[in-house]
Image (cartoon, rainbow, N blue to C red; front, side, top):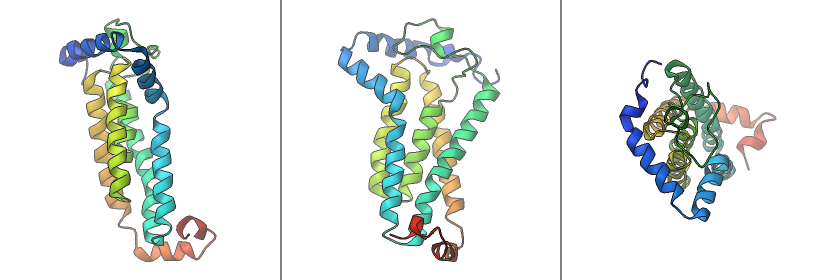
Length: 200
């Protein structure tokens, strides 16, 4: 481990407080958070689909920008996964031996940074390039996803904060690069078999 070898010293007490709060919370809340943590990323896929569908009605350039969003998310995931292999931080549920809502991931499934938080943050930032409204909805969903990962006990708070930073930065940089594609590229693609992807 390079960066987070003393993870528990950073925010172990905060993690423990959240896990204890989760255990004393109503079952319906814990169940809702657990389901959201496990399946909530599908919401971001839905938001990306809606953004692309609407962008097709605006212009081929807008549609091409919307199609760049999932590419940005994949890039954020790749960077985040690389950092996981570099840092190799144990999950808090394993290092602290806490009783958690979710099963503790297997050894070697590293904790820092959080993939879920990175993907959610990347989607939120990238969607702002397509629609401010969709981006705002995604920010709320990304915040809920980040909190849920600590609530169910699989991440330290600093894991999700780092994941958000990584995802947001990668998405911001990649979307700015992708938006520099020549504007006539969208027009050329719209004249091919890819036209249904770019024009309503």
